[in-house]
Amino acid sequence: MTDASPHGLEFEPEERQLADCLTDTRPLPPAGFRGRLGRDLAERDPGYGPRPERLRLVVGGYLGAGGLLIALVALGVS
Image 1 (spheres, rainbow, N blue to C red):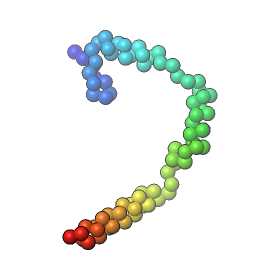
Image 2: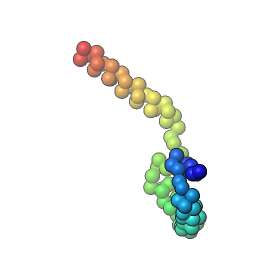
Image 3: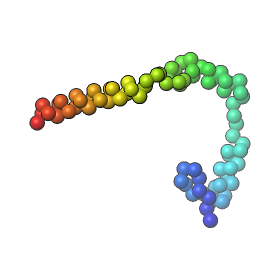
Image 4: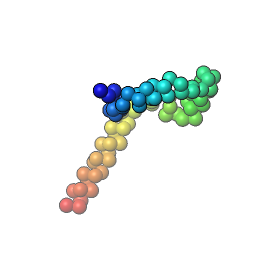
């Protein structure tokens, strides 16, 4: 019998053993590096942090305006 991976792929027992070995022995960067990376990403990319207030309202307004414009064009073409 084969083991199922989280991605829906099935592995033979030898492949599963190799995957487990690679997962267990993979190198991880030091905690200091990960912390600096997280702070650097938060500083450089404003989208990395919390989303703006009323984001759904703004997106909904843009979608509604776009839908209205497409409807007006469709009526004008007919």
